Amino acid sequence: MSAAYKDYGYRSPELGWAHAYLFPQLKAMLGPPAGPVLDLGCGNGAIARALIGEGYDVYGVDASESGIAIANAEAPGRFFVLDVSSGELPAALAGKRFDVVISTEVIEHLYDPRGFIAFARWILQGGGEFIVSTPYHGYLKNLALAASGKLDGHFTVLWDGGHIKFFSRHTLEQMLREQGFEVTGFAGAGRLPWFWKSMLVKARAV
Image (cartoon, rainbow, N blue to C red; front, side, top):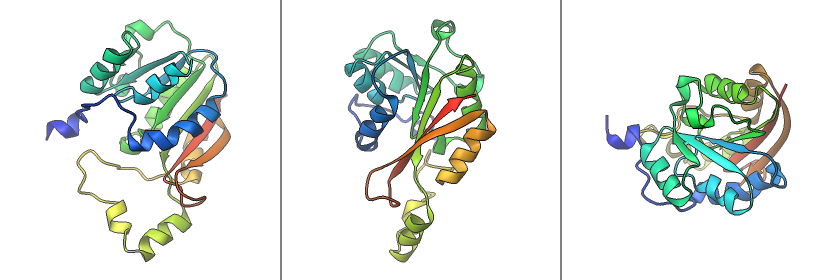
Protein backbone atom coordinates (compact mmCIF):
# COMPACT_ATOMS: atom_id res chain seq x y z
CA MET A 1 0.00 0.00 0.00
CA SER A 2 1.45 3.37 -1.01
CA ALA A 3 2.10 6.17 1.45
CA ALA A 4 -0.25 8.38 -0.58
CA TYR A 5 -3.08 5.94 0.09
CA LYS A 6 -2.53 5.96 3.86
CA ASP A 7 -1.92 9.70 4.08
CA TYR A 8 -2.83 12.17 1.35
CA GLY A 9 0.62 13.71 1.69
CA TYR A 10 -0.44 17.34 1.97
CA ARG A 11 2.32 19.71 0.87
CA SER A 12 0.56 23.06 0.70
CA PRO A 13 -1.62 25.01 3.15
CA GLU A 14 -3.65 26.58 0.33
CA LEU A 15 -7.40 26.23 -0.17
CA GLY A 16 -7.92 23.46 -2.75
CA TRP A 17 -10.03 23.77 -5.88
CA ALA A 18 -12.96 21.91 -4.32
CA HIS A 19 -12.79 23.89 -1.08
CA ALA A 20 -12.79 27.18 -2.98
CA TYR A 21 -16.27 26.64 -4.46
CA LEU A 22 -17.64 25.07 -1.25
CA PHE A 23 -16.52 27.86 1.06
CA PRO A 24 -19.17 30.51 0.23
CA GLN A 25 -22.02 28.00 0.66
CA LEU A 26 -20.51 26.65 3.87
CA LYS A 27 -20.17 30.13 5.32
CA ALA A 28 -23.77 30.94 4.39
CA MET A 29 -24.99 27.79 6.17
CA LEU A 30 -22.93 28.59 9.26
CA GLY A 31 -24.26 32.11 9.59
CA PRO A 32 -22.40 34.71 11.67
CA PRO A 33 -19.55 33.48 13.94
CA ALA A 34 -20.87 32.18 17.25
CA GLY A 35 -19.79 29.16 19.33
CA PRO A 36 -16.97 26.64 18.75
CA VAL A 37 -16.91 24.68 15.47
CA LEU A 38 -15.19 21.32 14.88
CA ASP A 39 -13.93 20.45 11.39
CA LEU A 40 -14.16 16.65 11.27
CA GLY A 41 -11.67 15.41 8.67
CA CYS A 42 -10.03 18.81 8.26
CA GLY A 43 -7.15 17.66 6.01
CA ASN A 44 -4.54 20.42 5.90
CA GLY A 45 -6.89 22.77 7.75
CA ALA A 46 -7.54 25.00 4.73
CA ILE A 47 -11.29 25.36 5.29
CA ALA A 48 -10.91 25.69 9.06
CA ARG A 49 -8.19 28.34 8.74
CA ALA A 50 -10.24 30.29 6.20
CA LEU A 51 -13.11 30.29 8.68
CA ILE A 52 -10.78 31.36 11.51
CA GLY A 53 -9.77 34.27 9.30
CA GLU A 54 -13.46 35.23 9.10
CA GLY A 55 -13.79 35.27 12.88
CA TYR A 56 -15.04 31.74 13.58
CA ASP A 57 -13.73 29.71 16.53
CA VAL A 58 -12.69 26.54 14.70
CA TYR A 59 -10.74 23.41 15.66
CA GLY A 60 -9.91 20.47 13.43
CA VAL A 61 -9.12 16.76 13.54
CA ASP A 62 -7.88 14.44 10.80
CA ALA A 63 -6.08 11.11 10.41
CA SER A 64 -3.43 12.71 8.16
CA GLU A 65 -0.28 13.57 10.09
CA SER A 66 1.08 15.66 7.21
CA GLY A 67 -2.20 17.58 6.97
CA ILE A 68 -2.31 18.33 10.69
CA ALA A 69 1.35 19.42 10.67
CA ILE A 70 0.56 21.99 7.94
CA ALA A 71 -2.60 23.13 9.75
CA ASN A 72 -0.78 23.68 13.05
CA ALA A 73 2.10 25.49 11.35
CA GLU A 74 -0.45 28.03 10.13
CA ALA A 75 -2.71 28.10 13.25
CA PRO A 76 -0.93 26.44 16.20
CA GLY A 77 -2.80 24.48 18.83
CA ARG A 78 -6.09 24.09 16.98
CA PHE A 79 -5.51 20.87 15.02
CA PHE A 80 -5.09 17.29 16.18
CA VAL A 81 -4.40 13.87 14.64
CA LEU A 82 -7.39 11.58 15.13
CA ASP A 83 -8.64 8.29 13.72
CA VAL A 84 -12.40 8.87 13.83
CA SER A 85 -12.99 5.13 14.25
CA SER A 86 -11.59 5.51 17.79
CA GLY A 87 -14.95 6.99 18.78
CA GLU A 88 -13.48 9.70 20.98
CA LEU A 89 -11.94 13.14 20.65
CA PRO A 90 -8.30 13.94 21.47
CA ALA A 91 -7.72 14.71 25.14
CA ALA A 92 -7.18 18.42 24.38
CA LEU A 93 -10.73 18.65 22.97
CA ALA A 94 -12.51 16.14 25.20
CA GLY A 95 -14.01 18.73 27.53
CA LYS A 96 -14.99 21.22 24.84
CA ARG A 97 -18.62 21.62 23.76
CA PHE A 98 -19.05 22.23 20.04
CA ASP A 99 -22.09 24.02 18.67
CA VAL A 100 -21.39 22.93 15.09
CA VAL A 101 -19.53 20.07 13.40
CA ILE A 102 -18.56 20.51 9.75
CA SER A 103 -17.13 17.96 7.33
CA THR A 104 -16.24 18.79 3.73
CA GLU A 105 -15.59 16.15 1.06
CA VAL A 106 -14.73 13.39 3.55
CA ILE A 107 -17.68 11.01 3.87
CA GLU A 108 -17.33 9.69 0.30
CA HIS A 109 -13.91 8.25 1.21
CA LEU A 110 -15.13 6.17 4.17
CA TYR A 111 -16.06 2.50 4.45
CA ASP A 112 -18.37 3.29 7.38
CA PRO A 113 -20.21 6.57 6.70
CA ARG A 114 -22.92 5.66 9.23
CA GLY A 115 -20.28 5.36 11.94
CA PHE A 116 -18.84 8.71 10.90
CA ILE A 117 -22.24 10.41 11.16
CA ALA A 118 -22.87 8.68 14.49
CA PHE A 119 -19.56 10.08 15.76
CA ALA A 120 -20.62 13.59 14.73
CA ARG A 121 -23.92 13.01 16.56
CA TRP A 122 -22.01 11.89 19.67
CA ILE A 123 -19.89 15.07 19.56
CA LEU A 124 -23.15 17.05 19.41
CA GLN A 125 -24.81 15.13 22.24
CA GLY A 126 -25.56 18.43 23.96
CA GLY A 127 -27.31 19.64 20.79
CA GLY A 128 -26.02 21.47 17.74
CA GLU A 129 -25.74 21.32 13.97
CA PHE A 130 -23.84 19.16 11.50
CA ILE A 131 -22.95 20.48 8.03
CA VAL A 132 -21.60 17.86 5.64
CA SER A 133 -20.58 18.15 2.00
CA THR A 134 -19.94 15.45 -0.57
CA PRO A 135 -19.94 15.21 -4.38
CA TYR A 136 -23.50 15.44 -5.73
CA HIS A 137 -25.04 12.55 -7.65
CA GLY A 138 -28.49 12.88 -9.13
CA TYR A 139 -30.43 11.46 -12.07
CA LEU A 140 -29.83 14.33 -14.51
CA LYS A 141 -26.13 14.62 -13.70
CA ASN A 142 -25.58 10.87 -14.03
CA LEU A 143 -27.54 10.82 -17.30
CA ALA A 144 -25.39 13.66 -18.67
CA LEU A 145 -22.21 11.85 -17.63
CA ALA A 146 -23.37 8.67 -19.37
CA ALA A 147 -24.46 10.51 -22.54
CA SER A 148 -21.16 12.38 -22.75
CA GLY A 149 -19.05 9.26 -22.27
CA LYS A 150 -17.58 10.58 -19.02
CA LEU A 151 -19.22 8.15 -16.61
CA ASP A 152 -16.21 5.84 -16.39
CA GLY A 153 -13.89 8.73 -15.64
CA HIS A 154 -16.23 10.14 -13.01
CA PHE A 155 -16.59 6.84 -11.16
CA THR A 156 -12.97 5.86 -11.72
CA VAL A 157 -11.42 3.02 -9.73
CA LEU A 158 -7.91 4.12 -10.73
CA TRP A 159 -7.45 6.70 -7.95
CA ASP A 160 -5.90 5.07 -4.88
CA GLY A 161 -7.69 6.41 -1.81
CA GLY A 162 -10.46 7.87 -3.95
CA HIS A 163 -14.22 7.92 -3.57
CA ILE A 164 -15.85 4.68 -2.46
CA LYS A 165 -19.36 5.98 -1.63
CA PHE A 166 -21.54 7.99 -4.01
CA PHE A 167 -24.40 9.91 -2.41
CA SER A 168 -27.57 11.41 -3.78
CA ARG A 169 -29.39 14.02 -1.75
CA HIS A 170 -31.92 11.38 -0.74
CA THR A 171 -29.38 8.83 0.50
CA LEU A 172 -27.30 11.35 2.45
CA GLU A 173 -30.36 12.85 4.13
CA GLN A 174 -31.71 9.36 4.92
CA MET A 175 -28.43 8.38 6.58
CA LEU A 176 -28.42 11.58 8.64
CA ARG A 177 -31.96 10.88 9.86
CA GLU A 178 -31.04 7.30 10.75
CA GLN A 179 -28.32 8.59 13.06
CA GLY A 180 -30.46 11.08 14.97
CA PHE A 181 -30.40 14.25 12.88
CA GLU A 182 -33.20 16.39 11.49
CA VAL A 183 -32.32 17.82 8.06
CA THR A 184 -32.77 21.60 8.00
CA GLY A 185 -30.99 22.82 4.87
CA PHE A 186 -29.56 21.90 1.46
CA ALA A 187 -27.37 23.72 -1.04
CA GLY A 188 -25.66 22.75 -4.27
CA ALA A 189 -22.16 24.04 -5.02
CA GLY A 190 -20.35 24.42 -8.33
CA ARG A 191 -21.81 24.34 -11.86
CA LEU A 192 -25.51 24.75 -12.71
CA PRO A 193 -28.44 23.55 -10.59
CA TRP A 194 -28.95 19.75 -10.73
CA PHE A 195 -25.47 19.37 -12.23
CA TRP A 196 -23.67 20.54 -9.08
CA LYS A 197 -20.16 19.37 -8.33
CA SER A 198 -21.01 18.96 -4.63
CA MET A 199 -23.88 19.36 -2.21
CA LEU A 200 -24.03 20.55 1.38
CA VAL A 201 -26.63 19.29 3.84
CA LYS A 202 -27.29 20.92 7.19
CA ALA A 203 -28.87 18.92 10.01
CA ARG A 204 -29.73 19.46 13.65
CA ALA A 205 -29.04 16.91 16.39
CA VAL A 206 -32.35 15.78 17.93
